[in-house]
Image 1: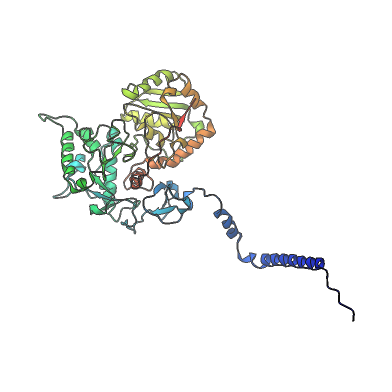
Image 2 (image 1 turned 60 degrees about the vertical axis):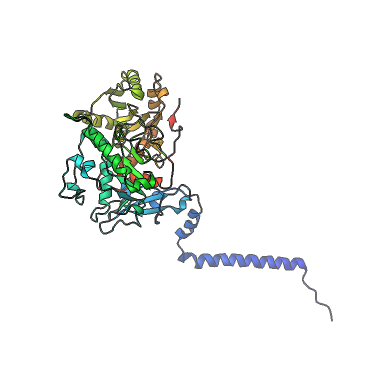
Length: 492
């Protein structure tokens, strides 16, 4: 019987390879024809997107917030009809994919200890330290005004007094945090027990006290402003809360450069809310513990839709204010003589009278750039007038510290110039003329987005000045330090 011949190894290998190839092709077509109709292509795209580098876009975050995170508020256009908005929480030490949000309360919701990232205890101080300075008189044993109706809260005096009114707005916010019918962001809540608090707020209207009561009247030996400061020190140093912490967890608002002038060193362990550090020694006030707050602007805000674009702003650079200043403000005089004859530059003396404010409002709204030059102190409300006018600020103040600079990049909507370069003949105007329509428009668009951060109002809104200040204080809980860099300045 003849022997059977077995297939050669090469033939077996070929048959096996062909079979595997046929199996793979069949599987592919089967998967495509059966599975694909039930799985939308967006699912497959999602797998790709989730593995790409994260692009920080606040409007796509939908998670809940942990405590002690940086808060970058959304622009007001993101607020939906139900009066709920989102705020993005960014922990600089963690991956941004863990971003969270907090809700703005609707009328049916209540801000609670669990929801608010910042808990503040406020001293029940006599009215003569706060709303009594506004000539408010409560009923018998009434410590605070009724703030449940925003139309009937005591009004802060206007004019230049208003630019340093931060203590008023922050106190209103704390009082309203326990009022159910007030719709506000739940960024801070007032607690009744100091042991529950992150900070202790001192409700002394120090700027108003200076503006209204710093003169010695009649036969008095000291001013009412001085008396109130001395009484404040006596009150605080005898409080068990101050003794326990040495004042390090206390918040004191002293926005006017001359407020708390007599006692600031005695209270220097507290956390100050200031306009700048121009009249403070570093041991008393510094970025490690204190917060810089924006001035309340004096000119009227311009809406996004009414803001003039590049072509409709004929003035290149605008400045109107006091020209002859002392100390660091001497540069104003130098710049005046350099720029006064430039045809497209407005550089004149101006006052805070009603006509002066109207002129400034019109002038800033029709100028491409607004000069913010150091005066007696590094800062002024002129910067914030420029921002709400959507006039690109030109900041010529070497020692200036800016509000919320740890979360807000001012170089996106401002031009920084060292004073030593600004006074060189031709440097400043050539720099500004060299910024074309495209670059200017980019800064202008950003100005319209950030302008809300510099608006004080009651009740507060997500991302306005009141909300941003409380958020800045919340960031101090984890000792997040503000960024300080010289790279923001323009060089020749």
